[in-house]
Image 1 (cartoon, rainbow, N blue to C red):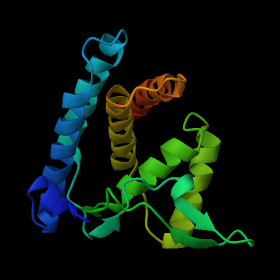
Image 2 (image 1 turned 135 degrees about the vertical axis):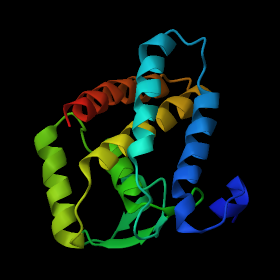
Image 3 (image 1 turned 120 degrees about the vertical axis):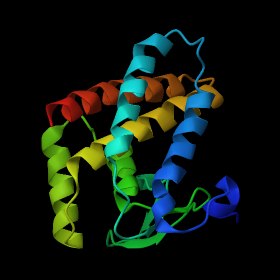
Amino acid sequence: MRFWQDRDGLSTHWVLWKQQLELMISKWMSRINPLSSDYHEFCDQLNQLRKYAKAICEPTQLHLLHCDYIGRNILVDRENRVSGIIDFDAARIGDAVYDLAKIIWVDIDFSDLELRNAFLEGWVCTYKQTVPKMKFLFYVGIQCLAAIAWTDKNPSADGTNAVFRASAIRTLRIVLKELEAL
């Protein structure tokens, strides 16, 4: 398995997380179809989101990131205890809040603020680490960008990718509204 420093040409030194993130953002921006009918709907929003990247600090601790940390990749036993994690193809080293943003956006109704906050409170209680709101929201926005790029690269015959894409665009609007309110 190629680890991220091989795939993207960066070392594992923690000060390079922002560079790694910028490489991922550039890659996903290049995969967006500018001819799609909804391109103008979200293109300005993505550019607005990128402005928040300057405020993202390097993580004080590096973590192994799964980068596809969602419900279908978490195995549970009969007592509903986590028994394993699968699909480490996109794994890299970076900020743990990035993985947290992915699982919350994909597996929880992001627009349900009460549910989202309950999950975040449980996470903080369990891991004894606060979740910086601006960083969390920025990463959710980046996950939306990744989803839009993925759907452009992987069109589906059954229309499910269009639903996923629309959800990403909707969530991106919510993220920007919440970022502006901070």
